[in-house]
Length: 204
Image (cartoon, rainbow, N blue to C red):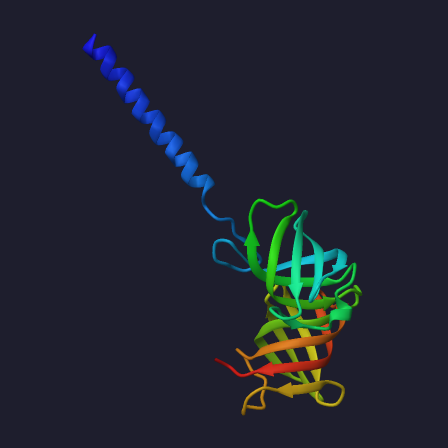
């Protein structure tokens, strides 16, 4: 009798522990990320705008990323926007960071940063990347970049045809330099940007 009671008691403890583990897992905040991120936060999620709706001080955009829909609130006051409002249209490629709100359908993101990459398949806007290789050319350089969207790009940066904006005192582009690229996107054994505008951040 005592042995049976003991077995029942142990079984109940095991069941309670299992239920506790399931509950704790359910309480863990979700992370959606295109390149790292903290729980409950979207970091550099790349997607395509499928619908937009004007808001009080900005807009709400429905963004499809990795086969899932997200409702993204983009405030004109609270968001850091790289690009123009007019470029956030159906078909635009965007990169979103912000707070992830659970319990909504579709999943709701309150954006704190939005990078607009353009809506045309042959263009990029505000592509962010870090130079990993560089080769001098006739009137500029050809650079390999690790894009913040996880893609490796090559880019032609012309001293004649490219508008280059330097942030900081160093007016140079070298390995480790962070760039924001806009221009024509072509396929040269991989994605290649013929840059018409480059913003150069200083090396950290």
